[in-house]
Image 1 (tube, rainbow, N blue to C red):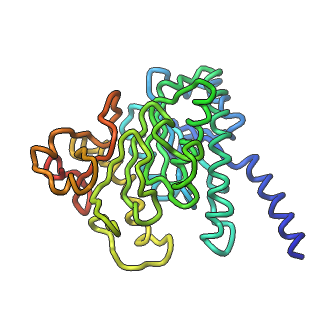
Image 2 (tube, helix red, strand yellow):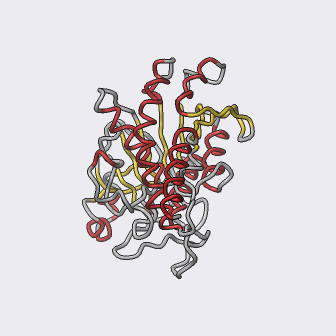
Length: 318
């Protein structure tokens, strides 16, 4: 019986892997879109969707994410309301789902391995899209948790073929199964020309180590990091309260669009130097979160935020 169930699970997995990751192309609102599987994603260029004068923003969700979830709804709506980009959702809902009774098992044995496979698959999708007229040099890939590694692996794979993506933003890249793996198997500073990372849950679900060209550490401290407004008590796994720190990264990204110039990070070689530095030292090298930088000072950037939106404190948060 166990063997039969196991074989069926493998067969089901193969079927799902073939036809469950899709790109959802939005026409101005969340409810107006066209969705295509990865292998047919280039067919969108047979329609009027693509505006070549705009940057294309693609957002990939994390474990248990779905199109009506809080992260996707908030991030996609923010880019649509901004009205400056072609907006796309990398929808891998089924492959990111909790399919077993145990959430941890679903993550380790289903979602995380699928994320790695999808990274390689997506690199081929991007090449097919490029051949159909898509300008890869005008893309911004934004991935939350496991989604950050999907885009990182895609970028790494393209680089082996002489293609470099311009910009990847990693929102709290997932730690388990990735943090201590080879750079080619995860998001890393070489995954794109500019890799910006926001670490809002480095003592929880996300990587503590720096993974980008620049890494923002809001409200960081040694030990357990709790974002202002989040509870430091224990809560059921993946409950809203439990995910408060992990979700803060995309909330900060959204605020960087809504309130430009308010979320600033201060460069320092380490937390202690930032914490003990003078205000003049903290203001010496400053970067705005959420902005593309051609030649930034690479390294870690620290900042303090408020407990609710608007989170940015400007220079007072340095």
